[in-house]
Each structure stands twice: as C-alpha cells, then as structure tokens.
Length: 137
Length: 129
Image (cartoon, rainbow over all chains, first blue to last red; front, top):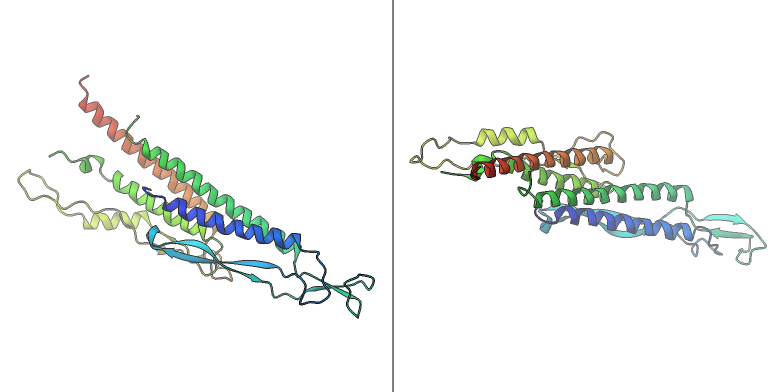
C-alpha cells in the first residue's frame, strides 16, 4: 500500500458509476418527451463498462466507460389525436425509457458507488496507520 | 549480526501480502458490473506454504555463508469460482468481495499491531531503564 493503486482503482469505479447515474438522470428527465415519429423519439442511453488493464497499476484492471449506446427497444406509442405532434393515425411516440428499469439501475449504481467509496475510506485509514508505524505503542 | 528482517519475522512480508490482496479485492469491487470480468483473489495459506517450501538453510554461525533471504509471501492470483454466474459473464459477488476486503483490512491492522509491538520491544531493549 505504498502507492495510490487502490485509490486509482476505486476512483475509476466512482467515475464509471457517476457516468451511469448521469445517463439514468438524463433518461428519466426525458421519459415523457413526445415526438411525431418513432425515429424522432428520444432513446434510453446506457453506458458500457470495460475492464482496462493498466501497467501503472501493476496490470490490475481499472473500469472505464467504453461508450454509451442507445437502447434498441421500440418506442412507446399513445393514441392522442388532439396532440399537436400526433401523426396521421392519431398516435404520438414516446421514448423507450422504462422507469422501473431505470430506478433499479439507479439503486444498483448508487450501491456500487458507496462500496467503492468505502474502499477508499478504508485504504486511507490503513495508509495513515502505516505511516505511524513504530511511533507509538 | 543484527538483522531487522529476522526480528520482524514474517510480519513485514505479511503486510506486503495484505496490501497486494487489498488491491486485488479493490479491483474486483471496481469491476463489479463490468461484463465478462472475472474476479481474482490470492490465498494466504498457499502463499505461506510456498514461502516455507522455498526457505533455504539458516545461517547459524557468523562465518558461514549468508543464508538466502527468506522467501517473500507471494500468492498467485487465482480466478474465483462464481457463486451465481451472471448472463454477462461477470463473476463478482459484491457482498463477498466487500466482506473479504473488510476482513483483509482488519488483518492488515493486526499485522501492523504486531510490527508496532516488535518495534516497541526493540526500543525497550535499547533504552537504559
């Protein structure tokens, strides 16, 4: 525990989880934005995680966000002929965001964030104690 | 000949081993949701047995050839057998890793305590009370 390997590992996870929380926030915020066609409707975004071996960490793997993909699920439709954005058949298209999925994903992301924060706190304590080795007792 | 290593015994190596293990466990926790990531861990018992097997003869007289340094504790990082494999190929069980990390931190502190006691014993021997 002489270097900051532990901190780098935990920090990479905090970063990845906060990207995930951000995409969830964006999905939930746009969950009810209507559009006049399926192609124009907002699509739920999902981050893709990847383990990235890092030579500076002794070949341990950081987690990084490889990219953000859009969900392939079909857009929701709602029959509402009086809506200004309704198509010829009277349908408006809503984003393919599933609120229940987003909520469970959010809880999972926040738990992961907490776990990694705890790794950081514990490592900090151990490091401080190691620095005081032999000074007391 | 006075050697700090012989006084500290296994504890110095154990501290290094614990530090390395905590890095591995932190890696597992960081990648708890990375697709296809396989959790890894090291086994203390196996590292200890390996180190004892490689420990050479001891130097019993000052004019003998110096004994080779006692083997350090180096465990091989092995893949964990998953409790419940998930569809995305990830084998991390977050609760298990958390428990292992905490347990390892406590043992690290215990080793630190042993070292502190060793140092205070040395200090006691040196002081003229």
